Amino acid sequence: MDIKFEKQISQFPQGLQEFFLESKESIKQEMWSSIENDMESTKKELHDIYSQIVELQKYKFELPDQEKVVKEWKRREVIKDRDEVVSQFPSFLTYIAGRKNGVPTIKFFLKEDDENAKRHFRNICAATQLKLDFFVARNNQTELKQSSENNGKRHIHTKLSKKFEMKRKKMLEIIGRHEDRLLASYSNLVRIGVRIENKDGSQCIDPCIELFCLDKVIVSSGEHMLPEQLEGYPVVISEDFYMFLSCQNCNSLNNGCSIGRHYDNSAGSIGFFFKNCLSERGFLTAAHVALNSKELNELYDSTELFSKRNEGSNHKIVHPSYQEKIDATIIGNVSEAFCGNHEKKLGGFNYTGIDAAFVKCTSEIEEEMFAMEIADEEDLRIKNLHVSKKGTATGETTGLLHEGTLTFKIDNKYFDGVFTSFKGCYVVQDIKTAFCDDGDSGSGVFLKETKNQPKKALGILFANSNSKSYVCDIKKIVELFNLEVYHKNPSVVKMIKVFMARLGKNIIEFFIMMAFCFFCLYLLC
Image 1 (tube, rainbow, N blue to C red):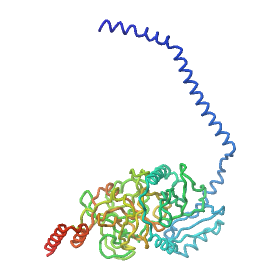
Image 2 (cartoon, rainbow, N blue to C red; image 1 turned 135 degrees about the vertical axis):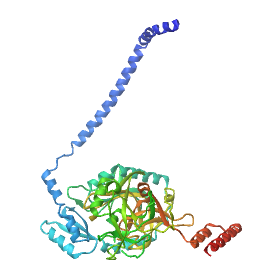
Image 3 (tube, rainbow, N blue to C red; image 1 turned 30 degrees about the vertical axis):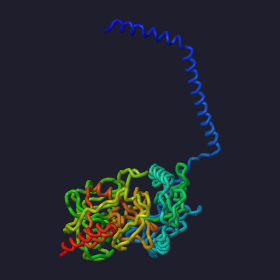
Image 4 (tube, rainbow, N blue to C red; image 1 turned 90 degrees about the vertical axis):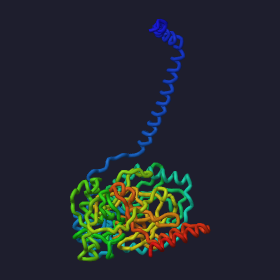
Protein backbone atom coordinates (compact mmCIF):
# COMPACT_ATOMS: atom_id res chain seq x y z
CA MET A 1 0.00 0.00 0.00
CA ASP A 2 1.16 3.56 -0.73
CA ILE A 3 2.82 5.13 2.40
CA LYS A 4 1.31 8.51 1.58
CA PHE A 5 -2.16 6.92 1.33
CA GLU A 6 -1.63 5.18 4.70
CA LYS A 7 -0.75 8.49 6.27
CA GLN A 8 -3.93 10.12 4.86
CA ILE A 9 -6.09 7.31 6.29
CA SER A 10 -4.48 7.65 9.74
CA GLN A 11 -5.22 11.40 9.69
CA PHE A 12 -8.95 10.91 8.75
CA PRO A 13 -10.36 10.53 12.33
CA GLN A 14 -8.47 13.63 13.45
CA GLY A 15 -9.84 15.62 10.49
CA LEU A 16 -13.37 14.41 11.21
CA GLN A 17 -13.03 15.49 14.86
CA GLU A 18 -11.78 18.95 13.84
CA PHE A 19 -14.71 19.31 11.41
CA PHE A 20 -17.29 18.51 14.12
CA LEU A 21 -15.61 20.91 16.60
CA GLU A 22 -15.65 23.72 14.04
CA SER A 23 -19.28 22.99 12.96
CA LYS A 24 -20.57 22.23 16.45
CA GLU A 25 -22.85 25.26 16.75
CA SER A 26 -24.33 25.05 13.25
CA ILE A 27 -25.02 21.30 13.64
CA LYS A 28 -26.68 21.89 17.01
CA GLN A 29 -28.81 24.67 15.52
CA GLU A 30 -29.95 22.47 12.61
CA MET A 31 -30.83 19.61 14.97
CA TRP A 32 -32.94 21.83 17.22
CA SER A 33 -34.64 23.39 14.20
CA SER A 34 -35.52 19.93 12.88
CA ILE A 35 -36.82 18.80 16.30
CA GLU A 36 -38.93 21.97 16.64
CA ASN A 37 -40.47 21.39 13.19
CA ASP A 38 -41.29 17.77 14.05
CA MET A 39 -42.77 18.78 17.39
CA GLU A 40 -44.88 21.48 15.74
CA SER A 41 -46.17 18.97 13.20
CA THR A 42 -46.92 16.43 15.95
CA LYS A 43 -48.69 19.15 17.96
CA LYS A 44 -50.93 19.93 14.96
CA GLU A 45 -51.73 16.24 14.40
CA LEU A 46 -52.56 15.74 18.09
CA HIS A 47 -54.80 18.83 17.94
CA ASP A 48 -56.64 17.36 14.91
CA ILE A 49 -57.13 14.05 16.74
CA TYR A 50 -58.39 15.90 19.81
CA SER A 51 -60.87 17.87 17.65
CA GLN A 52 -62.19 14.63 16.14
CA ILE A 53 -62.59 13.08 19.61
CA VAL A 54 -64.52 16.17 20.78
CA GLU A 55 -66.74 15.92 17.68
CA LEU A 56 -67.36 12.19 18.23
CA GLN A 57 -68.38 12.85 21.84
CA LYS A 58 -71.51 14.53 20.47
CA TYR A 59 -72.71 11.16 19.17
CA LYS A 60 -73.93 8.22 21.22
CA PHE A 61 -72.44 4.87 20.35
CA GLU A 62 -74.39 1.91 21.58
CA LEU A 63 -73.77 -1.74 20.88
CA PRO A 64 -76.82 -3.28 19.18
CA ASP A 65 -79.07 -5.48 21.25
CA GLN A 66 -77.96 -8.98 20.21
CA GLU A 67 -81.38 -10.52 20.86
CA LYS A 68 -83.01 -7.86 18.71
CA VAL A 69 -80.47 -8.42 15.89
CA VAL A 70 -81.07 -12.20 15.95
CA LYS A 71 -84.83 -11.61 15.93
CA GLU A 72 -84.49 -9.31 12.91
CA TRP A 73 -82.41 -11.87 11.02
CA LYS A 74 -84.91 -14.64 11.81
CA ARG A 75 -87.61 -12.56 10.11
CA ARG A 76 -85.83 -13.33 6.82
CA GLU A 77 -86.30 -17.08 7.23
CA VAL A 78 -89.88 -17.13 5.96
CA ILE A 79 -89.20 -20.02 3.56
CA LYS A 80 -87.58 -22.94 5.34
CA ASP A 81 -87.14 -25.32 2.38
CA ARG A 82 -86.44 -23.37 -0.81
CA ASP A 83 -86.04 -26.49 -3.00
CA GLU A 84 -89.48 -27.76 -2.02
CA VAL A 85 -91.11 -24.39 -2.79
CA VAL A 86 -89.35 -24.19 -6.19
CA SER A 87 -90.47 -27.71 -7.15
CA GLN A 88 -94.05 -27.02 -5.99
CA PHE A 89 -94.27 -23.53 -7.53
CA PRO A 90 -91.92 -23.15 -10.56
CA SER A 91 -93.02 -19.53 -10.92
CA PHE A 92 -91.28 -18.61 -7.62
CA LEU A 93 -87.96 -16.79 -8.14
CA THR A 94 -86.90 -15.14 -4.87
CA TYR A 95 -88.08 -12.90 -2.00
CA ILE A 96 -86.89 -10.15 0.33
CA ALA A 97 -88.01 -9.52 3.91
CA GLY A 98 -87.46 -6.28 5.81
CA ARG A 99 -89.07 -2.95 6.67
CA LYS A 100 -90.87 -0.69 4.22
CA ASN A 101 -91.36 2.80 5.70
CA GLY A 102 -90.94 1.19 9.13
CA VAL A 103 -93.57 -1.52 8.48
CA PRO A 104 -92.40 -5.21 8.51
CA THR A 105 -92.83 -6.34 4.87
CA ILE A 106 -92.10 -9.34 2.69
CA LYS A 107 -91.99 -9.17 -1.11
CA PHE A 108 -92.15 -12.27 -3.32
CA PHE A 109 -90.88 -12.27 -6.91
CA LEU A 110 -92.81 -14.54 -9.32
CA LYS A 111 -92.14 -15.30 -12.95
CA GLU A 112 -95.85 -15.79 -13.76
CA ASP A 113 -99.04 -14.53 -12.10
CA ASP A 114 -99.47 -17.80 -10.18
CA GLU A 115 -102.53 -17.60 -7.90
CA ASN A 116 -101.68 -20.93 -6.22
CA ALA A 117 -98.23 -19.63 -5.28
CA LYS A 118 -99.72 -16.36 -3.99
CA ARG A 119 -102.23 -18.27 -1.85
CA HIS A 120 -99.43 -20.45 -0.45
CA PHE A 121 -97.30 -17.42 0.51
CA ARG A 122 -100.30 -15.63 2.04
CA ASN A 123 -100.90 -18.67 4.25
CA ILE A 124 -97.22 -18.74 5.29
CA CYS A 125 -97.24 -15.05 6.20
CA ALA A 126 -100.65 -15.03 7.92
CA ALA A 127 -99.11 -15.81 11.33
CA THR A 128 -96.12 -13.48 10.94
CA GLN A 129 -98.07 -10.18 10.76
CA LEU A 130 -95.92 -9.15 7.81
CA LYS A 131 -97.27 -6.89 5.09
CA LEU A 132 -97.29 -8.90 1.84
CA ASP A 133 -96.22 -7.64 -1.59
CA PHE A 134 -95.74 -9.39 -4.96
CA PHE A 135 -93.69 -8.63 -8.07
CA VAL A 136 -94.81 -10.57 -11.17
CA ALA A 137 -92.23 -10.45 -13.98
CA ARG A 138 -94.76 -11.15 -16.76
CA ASN A 139 -97.12 -8.39 -15.58
CA ASN A 140 -94.19 -6.01 -15.86
CA GLN A 141 -93.59 -6.79 -19.55
CA THR A 142 -96.06 -4.21 -20.96
CA GLU A 143 -94.35 -1.38 -19.12
CA LEU A 144 -90.93 -2.66 -20.20
CA LYS A 145 -92.00 -2.90 -23.85
CA GLN A 146 -93.19 0.71 -23.78
CA SER A 147 -89.86 1.68 -22.25
CA SER A 148 -88.03 -0.28 -24.97
CA GLU A 149 -90.05 1.43 -27.71
CA ASN A 150 -89.01 4.79 -26.29
CA ASN A 151 -85.42 3.56 -26.31
CA GLY A 152 -85.82 2.86 -30.03
CA LYS A 153 -85.58 6.61 -30.63
CA ARG A 154 -82.24 6.88 -28.87
CA HIS A 155 -79.94 9.88 -28.97
CA ILE A 156 -76.77 9.54 -31.02
CA HIS A 157 -74.06 10.34 -28.50
CA THR A 158 -71.23 12.65 -29.25
CA LYS A 159 -67.77 11.45 -28.27
CA LEU A 160 -67.31 11.46 -24.50
CA SER A 161 -65.13 14.32 -23.30
CA LYS A 162 -61.79 13.48 -21.65
CA LYS A 163 -63.05 14.87 -18.34
CA PHE A 164 -66.23 12.73 -18.53
CA GLU A 165 -64.23 9.61 -19.47
CA MET A 166 -61.72 10.20 -16.63
CA LYS A 167 -64.58 10.48 -14.12
CA ARG A 168 -66.16 7.28 -15.45
CA LYS A 169 -62.89 5.36 -15.13
CA LYS A 170 -62.35 6.72 -11.61
CA MET A 171 -65.82 5.52 -10.63
CA LEU A 172 -65.14 2.07 -12.09
CA GLU A 173 -62.01 1.87 -9.93
CA ILE A 174 -64.05 2.85 -6.85
CA ILE A 175 -66.65 0.19 -7.70
CA GLY A 176 -63.85 -2.37 -8.05
CA ARG A 177 -62.69 -1.58 -4.50
CA HIS A 178 -66.14 -1.71 -2.90
CA GLU A 179 -68.31 -4.10 -4.97
CA ASP A 180 -67.61 -7.31 -3.00
CA ARG A 181 -68.33 -5.61 0.33
CA LEU A 182 -71.51 -3.97 -0.99
CA LEU A 183 -72.90 -7.13 -2.62
CA ALA A 184 -72.19 -9.14 0.54
CA SER A 185 -73.63 -6.49 2.90
CA TYR A 186 -76.88 -5.71 1.05
CA SER A 187 -79.03 -8.70 0.07
CA ASN A 188 -81.37 -6.31 -1.76
CA LEU A 189 -78.57 -5.11 -4.09
CA VAL A 190 -78.45 -6.73 -7.55
CA ARG A 191 -76.28 -4.55 -9.79
CA ILE A 192 -73.52 -1.92 -9.60
CA GLY A 193 -72.46 0.27 -12.49
CA VAL A 194 -71.74 3.78 -13.74
CA ARG A 195 -74.67 5.70 -15.19
CA ILE A 196 -73.76 7.67 -18.28
CA GLU A 197 -77.27 7.97 -19.78
CA ASN A 198 -80.56 9.48 -18.68
CA LYS A 199 -83.75 7.42 -18.93
CA ASP A 200 -84.57 8.93 -22.33
CA GLY A 201 -81.21 7.73 -23.68
CA SER A 202 -79.54 11.16 -23.69
CA GLN A 203 -76.06 11.47 -22.22
CA CYS A 204 -75.77 12.58 -18.57
CA ILE A 205 -74.04 15.88 -17.83
CA ASP A 206 -71.83 13.97 -15.36
CA PRO A 207 -71.48 10.20 -14.79
CA CYS A 208 -72.53 8.81 -11.41
CA ILE A 209 -72.34 5.52 -9.53
CA GLU A 210 -75.63 3.61 -9.80
CA LEU A 211 -76.80 0.89 -7.40
CA PHE A 212 -79.72 -1.29 -8.48
CA CYS A 213 -81.81 -3.11 -5.88
CA LEU A 214 -84.93 -5.28 -5.85
CA ASP A 215 -86.88 -2.59 -3.98
CA LYS A 216 -85.72 0.96 -3.25
CA VAL A 217 -87.87 1.37 -0.15
CA ILE A 218 -87.52 -2.01 1.62
CA VAL A 219 -84.54 -2.22 4.00
CA SER A 220 -83.75 -5.93 4.46
CA SER A 221 -83.93 -7.27 8.02
CA GLY A 222 -80.66 -6.83 9.90
CA GLU A 223 -79.25 -4.43 7.27
CA HIS A 224 -78.92 -0.68 6.72
CA MET A 225 -80.04 1.63 3.93
CA LEU A 226 -77.90 1.67 0.78
CA PRO A 227 -75.08 4.28 0.82
CA GLU A 228 -75.69 7.73 -0.65
CA GLN A 229 -72.05 8.18 -1.71
CA LEU A 230 -68.85 6.20 -2.29
CA GLU A 231 -65.50 7.91 -1.68
CA GLY A 232 -67.16 11.30 -2.10
CA TYR A 233 -68.93 10.43 -5.38
CA PRO A 234 -72.77 10.57 -5.35
CA VAL A 235 -74.76 7.34 -5.65
CA VAL A 236 -78.09 6.97 -7.49
CA ILE A 237 -80.44 4.17 -6.34
CA SER A 238 -82.60 2.41 -8.96
CA GLU A 239 -84.69 -0.77 -9.11
CA ASP A 240 -84.09 -3.83 -11.26
CA PHE A 241 -84.65 -7.59 -11.28
CA TYR A 242 -82.56 -10.37 -12.85
CA MET A 243 -83.31 -13.84 -14.15
CA PHE A 244 -81.33 -16.48 -15.93
CA LEU A 245 -82.92 -17.21 -19.29
CA SER A 246 -83.97 -20.81 -19.78
CA CYS A 247 -86.90 -22.49 -22.21
CA GLN A 248 -88.34 -23.38 -26.58
CA ASN A 249 -88.64 -24.29 -30.65
CA CYS A 250 -86.56 -25.63 -33.52
CA ASN A 251 -85.90 -28.87 -35.36
CA SER A 252 -82.29 -28.75 -36.60
CA LEU A 253 -78.91 -28.28 -34.93
CA ASN A 254 -77.84 -24.69 -35.58
CA ASN A 255 -77.00 -21.41 -33.83
CA GLY A 256 -79.87 -20.54 -31.49
CA CYS A 257 -81.36 -24.07 -31.45
CA SER A 258 -83.24 -25.38 -28.42
CA ILE A 259 -81.25 -27.65 -26.09
CA GLY A 260 -81.70 -29.05 -22.59
CA ARG A 261 -80.30 -31.48 -20.02
CA HIS A 262 -81.07 -35.19 -20.38
CA TYR A 263 -84.13 -36.20 -18.31
CA ASP A 264 -84.59 -32.63 -17.09
CA ASN A 265 -87.21 -29.98 -17.83
CA SER A 266 -84.57 -27.36 -18.68
CA ALA A 267 -83.99 -25.40 -21.85
CA GLY A 268 -81.58 -22.96 -23.45
CA SER A 269 -79.92 -22.16 -26.78
CA ILE A 270 -76.85 -23.16 -28.77
CA GLY A 271 -74.26 -20.38 -29.02
CA PHE A 272 -71.05 -20.58 -31.07
CA PHE A 273 -69.73 -23.71 -32.85
CA PHE A 274 -66.01 -24.47 -32.52
CA LYS A 275 -63.31 -27.04 -31.76
CA ASN A 276 -61.37 -27.43 -28.53
CA CYS A 277 -57.62 -28.09 -28.18
CA LEU A 278 -58.22 -31.83 -28.81
CA SER A 279 -59.98 -30.99 -32.11
CA GLU A 280 -63.28 -32.17 -30.61
CA ARG A 281 -66.21 -30.40 -32.24
CA GLY A 282 -68.99 -28.84 -30.24
CA PHE A 283 -70.68 -25.63 -29.19
CA LEU A 284 -70.87 -23.10 -26.39
CA THR A 285 -73.94 -22.48 -24.26
CA ALA A 286 -74.55 -21.14 -20.74
CA ALA A 287 -73.34 -23.25 -17.80
CA HIS A 288 -76.73 -22.95 -16.06
CA VAL A 289 -78.33 -24.50 -19.16
CA ALA A 290 -75.91 -27.46 -19.25
CA LEU A 291 -75.67 -28.20 -15.50
CA ASN A 292 -78.24 -28.62 -12.72
CA SER A 293 -78.44 -26.25 -9.73
CA LYS A 294 -76.40 -28.48 -7.38
CA GLU A 295 -73.54 -28.76 -9.90
CA LEU A 296 -73.75 -25.05 -10.64
CA ASN A 297 -73.49 -24.19 -6.93
CA GLU A 298 -70.44 -26.42 -6.51
CA LEU A 299 -68.82 -24.96 -9.63
CA TYR A 300 -69.39 -21.37 -8.46
CA ASP A 301 -68.03 -22.09 -4.98
CA SER A 302 -64.93 -23.90 -6.29
CA THR A 303 -63.90 -21.20 -8.83
CA GLU A 304 -62.42 -24.10 -10.84
CA LEU A 305 -63.03 -25.49 -14.29
CA PHE A 306 -65.69 -28.22 -14.50
CA SER A 307 -63.17 -30.69 -16.02
CA LYS A 308 -60.93 -30.48 -12.93
CA ARG A 309 -63.76 -31.56 -10.64
CA ASN A 310 -65.69 -33.92 -12.91
CA GLU A 311 -63.16 -35.95 -14.87
CA GLY A 312 -64.89 -38.62 -16.96
CA SER A 313 -68.39 -37.39 -16.00
CA ASN A 314 -71.33 -37.96 -18.34
CA HIS A 315 -73.62 -34.91 -18.56
CA LYS A 316 -75.77 -35.47 -21.64
CA ILE A 317 -77.39 -32.67 -23.62
CA VAL A 318 -80.50 -33.18 -25.78
CA HIS A 319 -81.99 -31.39 -28.80
CA PRO A 320 -84.59 -30.01 -28.73
CA SER A 321 -85.35 -29.63 -25.02
CA TYR A 322 -87.91 -31.85 -23.33
CA GLN A 323 -90.12 -28.77 -22.99
CA GLU A 324 -90.69 -29.07 -26.73
CA LYS A 325 -90.35 -32.75 -27.52
CA ILE A 326 -90.72 -35.78 -25.27
CA ASP A 327 -88.44 -37.94 -27.44
CA ALA A 328 -85.57 -35.45 -27.73
CA THR A 329 -82.25 -36.69 -29.18
CA ILE A 330 -78.98 -36.80 -27.23
CA ILE A 331 -76.52 -34.65 -29.18
CA GLY A 332 -73.49 -34.43 -26.89
CA ASN A 333 -71.85 -34.28 -23.44
CA VAL A 334 -70.62 -31.38 -21.32
CA SER A 335 -66.81 -31.56 -21.37
CA GLU A 336 -65.99 -28.12 -19.91
CA ALA A 337 -67.75 -25.37 -17.97
CA PHE A 338 -67.14 -22.42 -15.68
CA CYS A 339 -69.54 -20.38 -13.56
CA GLY A 340 -68.31 -17.44 -11.50
CA ASN A 341 -65.67 -14.74 -11.76
CA HIS A 342 -62.31 -15.35 -13.41
CA GLU A 343 -59.35 -13.06 -12.75
CA LYS A 344 -58.87 -10.35 -15.33
CA LYS A 345 -57.86 -6.69 -15.47
CA LEU A 346 -60.57 -4.56 -17.03
CA GLY A 347 -60.97 -0.91 -16.01
CA GLY A 348 -61.92 -0.90 -12.33
CA PHE A 349 -62.73 -4.61 -12.32
CA ASN A 350 -60.23 -7.31 -11.33
CA TYR A 351 -62.44 -10.17 -12.53
CA THR A 352 -64.83 -10.98 -15.34
CA GLY A 353 -68.03 -12.99 -14.89
CA ILE A 354 -68.41 -16.19 -16.92
CA ASP A 355 -71.41 -18.52 -17.22
CA ALA A 356 -70.45 -20.87 -20.06
CA ALA A 357 -70.17 -24.56 -20.98
CA PHE A 358 -68.63 -26.45 -23.90
CA VAL A 359 -70.73 -29.37 -25.18
CA LYS A 360 -68.79 -31.95 -27.20
CA CYS A 361 -71.08 -33.15 -29.98
CA THR A 362 -71.54 -36.88 -30.59
CA SER A 363 -72.66 -36.19 -34.17
CA GLU A 364 -70.57 -34.58 -36.90
CA ILE A 365 -70.62 -30.82 -37.43
CA GLU A 366 -70.10 -29.95 -41.08
CA GLU A 367 -66.78 -28.49 -42.24
CA GLU A 368 -68.45 -25.38 -43.61
CA MET A 369 -67.37 -23.56 -40.47
CA PHE A 370 -64.62 -20.94 -40.30
CA ALA A 371 -62.88 -19.16 -37.45
CA MET A 372 -65.08 -16.24 -36.44
CA GLU A 373 -63.31 -12.99 -35.62
CA ILE A 374 -63.65 -11.96 -32.00
CA ALA A 375 -64.42 -8.36 -31.03
CA ASP A 376 -61.48 -6.59 -29.37
CA GLU A 377 -61.16 -3.41 -27.32
CA GLU A 378 -60.67 -1.32 -30.45
CA ASP A 379 -63.99 -2.54 -31.92
CA LEU A 380 -65.79 -1.58 -28.71
CA ARG A 381 -64.54 2.03 -28.73
CA ILE A 382 -67.12 2.89 -31.42
CA LYS A 383 -70.26 4.56 -30.03
CA ASN A 384 -73.82 3.22 -30.51
CA LEU A 385 -72.77 -0.31 -31.47
CA HIS A 386 -75.58 -2.65 -32.49
CA VAL A 387 -75.45 -6.34 -31.61
CA SER A 388 -77.50 -9.35 -32.68
CA LYS A 389 -78.29 -12.80 -31.37
CA LYS A 390 -80.33 -15.83 -32.43
CA GLY A 391 -82.09 -17.71 -29.64
CA THR A 392 -84.73 -20.38 -29.09
CA ALA A 393 -87.40 -18.10 -27.63
CA THR A 394 -87.19 -14.83 -29.56
CA GLY A 395 -85.31 -15.82 -32.71
CA GLU A 396 -82.99 -13.23 -34.27
CA THR A 397 -83.06 -9.87 -32.49
CA THR A 398 -81.02 -6.67 -32.37
CA GLY A 399 -79.96 -4.57 -29.38
CA LEU A 400 -77.76 -1.61 -28.49
CA LEU A 401 -74.49 -2.30 -26.68
CA HIS A 402 -74.18 -0.24 -23.49
CA GLU A 403 -70.83 1.49 -23.01
CA GLY A 404 -68.60 -0.11 -20.42
CA THR A 405 -69.21 -3.18 -18.25
CA LEU A 406 -70.84 -3.72 -14.86
CA THR A 407 -71.30 -6.10 -11.93
CA PHE A 408 -74.62 -7.65 -10.95
CA LYS A 409 -75.89 -10.15 -8.40
CA ILE A 410 -78.43 -12.89 -9.01
CA ASP A 411 -80.48 -14.87 -6.53
CA ASN A 412 -82.86 -17.53 -7.83
CA LYS A 413 -83.54 -21.27 -7.98
CA TYR A 414 -80.23 -22.00 -9.73
CA PHE A 415 -78.18 -20.93 -6.72
CA ASP A 416 -80.51 -21.93 -3.87
CA GLY A 417 -80.49 -18.41 -2.43
CA VAL A 418 -76.67 -18.23 -2.29
CA PHE A 419 -74.99 -14.82 -2.82
CA THR A 420 -73.60 -14.91 -6.38
CA SER A 421 -72.24 -12.08 -8.48
CA PHE A 422 -70.94 -11.72 -12.04
CA LYS A 423 -68.44 -8.95 -12.73
CA GLY A 424 -67.33 -7.08 -15.83
CA CYS A 425 -70.31 -8.16 -18.00
CA TYR A 426 -71.45 -6.51 -21.23
CA VAL A 427 -74.91 -4.92 -21.20
CA VAL A 428 -77.31 -4.90 -24.17
CA GLN A 429 -80.24 -2.45 -24.24
CA ASP A 430 -83.54 -3.44 -25.90
CA ILE A 431 -84.48 -1.56 -29.08
CA LYS A 432 -88.28 -1.45 -29.64
CA THR A 433 -88.67 -5.18 -28.90
CA ALA A 434 -87.13 -7.40 -26.23
CA PHE A 435 -83.61 -8.57 -27.09
CA CYS A 436 -84.18 -11.91 -25.30
CA ASP A 437 -86.56 -14.01 -23.22
CA ASP A 438 -86.67 -17.31 -21.34
CA GLY A 439 -84.94 -19.99 -23.40
CA ASP A 440 -82.39 -17.67 -25.00
CA SER A 441 -79.61 -18.38 -22.45
CA GLY A 442 -76.47 -19.62 -24.17
CA SER A 443 -77.11 -17.72 -27.42
CA GLY A 444 -74.08 -16.24 -29.15
CA VAL A 445 -74.10 -12.42 -29.28
CA PHE A 446 -72.36 -10.70 -32.21
CA LEU A 447 -71.38 -7.18 -33.15
CA LYS A 448 -73.49 -6.60 -36.26
CA GLU A 449 -71.81 -6.64 -39.65
CA THR A 450 -71.27 -3.21 -41.20
CA LYS A 451 -69.73 -1.80 -44.38
CA ASN A 452 -66.39 -1.45 -42.66
CA GLN A 453 -66.18 -4.58 -40.54
CA PRO A 454 -67.43 -8.19 -40.54
CA LYS A 455 -69.65 -9.84 -37.94
CA LYS A 456 -67.65 -10.35 -34.72
CA ALA A 457 -68.32 -12.52 -31.69
CA LEU A 458 -68.92 -10.58 -28.45
CA GLY A 459 -70.04 -13.17 -25.89
CA ILE A 460 -72.59 -15.60 -24.44
CA LEU A 461 -76.03 -14.33 -23.37
CA PHE A 462 -76.96 -15.60 -19.91
CA ALA A 463 -79.27 -13.23 -17.97
CA ASN A 464 -81.67 -10.32 -18.34
CA SER A 465 -83.50 -7.61 -16.40
CA ASN A 466 -85.77 -4.67 -17.18
CA SER A 467 -85.09 -4.04 -20.89
CA LYS A 468 -81.42 -5.06 -20.50
CA SER A 469 -79.57 -8.31 -21.27
CA TYR A 470 -76.22 -9.52 -19.92
CA VAL A 471 -73.39 -11.11 -21.85
CA CYS A 472 -70.14 -12.73 -20.66
CA ASP A 473 -66.97 -11.97 -22.62
CA ILE A 474 -66.18 -14.52 -25.36
CA LYS A 475 -62.47 -13.59 -25.28
CA LYS A 476 -62.14 -14.86 -21.72
CA ILE A 477 -64.16 -18.02 -22.44
CA VAL A 478 -62.01 -18.89 -25.47
CA GLU A 479 -58.84 -18.31 -23.44
CA LEU A 480 -60.12 -20.28 -20.43
CA PHE A 481 -61.46 -23.26 -22.42
CA ASN A 482 -58.66 -23.15 -25.04
CA LEU A 483 -61.10 -22.92 -27.95
CA GLU A 484 -61.27 -21.71 -31.53
CA VAL A 485 -64.64 -20.17 -32.33
CA TYR A 486 -66.45 -21.25 -35.51
CA HIS A 487 -69.35 -19.85 -37.53
CA LYS A 488 -71.04 -20.90 -40.78
CA ASN A 489 -69.34 -19.85 -44.01
CA PRO A 490 -71.11 -16.99 -45.85
CA SER A 491 -72.52 -17.63 -49.32
CA VAL A 492 -70.72 -16.48 -52.47
CA VAL A 493 -73.57 -14.04 -53.14
CA LYS A 494 -73.01 -12.48 -49.74
CA MET A 495 -69.26 -12.28 -50.39
CA ILE A 496 -69.98 -10.42 -53.66
CA LYS A 497 -72.31 -8.01 -51.86
CA VAL A 498 -69.69 -7.27 -49.21
CA PHE A 499 -67.03 -6.86 -51.91
CA MET A 500 -69.24 -4.47 -53.90
CA ALA A 501 -70.09 -2.45 -50.80
CA ARG A 502 -66.43 -1.96 -50.02
CA LEU A 503 -65.49 -0.86 -53.56
CA GLY A 504 -65.67 2.78 -54.56
CA LYS A 505 -66.91 4.32 -57.80
CA ASN A 506 -63.50 4.38 -59.46
CA ILE A 507 -63.66 2.80 -62.97
CA ILE A 508 -60.63 0.57 -62.34
CA GLU A 509 -62.28 -0.73 -59.19
CA PHE A 510 -65.45 -1.34 -61.23
CA PHE A 511 -63.61 -3.64 -63.68
CA ILE A 512 -61.92 -5.46 -60.80
CA MET A 513 -65.35 -5.97 -59.28
CA MET A 514 -66.77 -7.33 -62.57
CA ALA A 515 -63.85 -9.73 -62.98
CA PHE A 516 -64.36 -10.98 -59.43
CA CYS A 517 -68.10 -11.52 -60.09
CA PHE A 518 -67.43 -13.54 -63.30
CA PHE A 519 -64.87 -15.62 -61.43
CA CYS A 520 -67.41 -16.40 -58.68
CA LEU A 521 -70.05 -17.34 -61.27
CA TYR A 522 -67.50 -19.61 -62.99
CA LEU A 523 -66.88 -21.38 -59.65
CA LEU A 524 -70.62 -21.82 -59.11
CA CYS A 525 -71.09 -23.37 -62.55
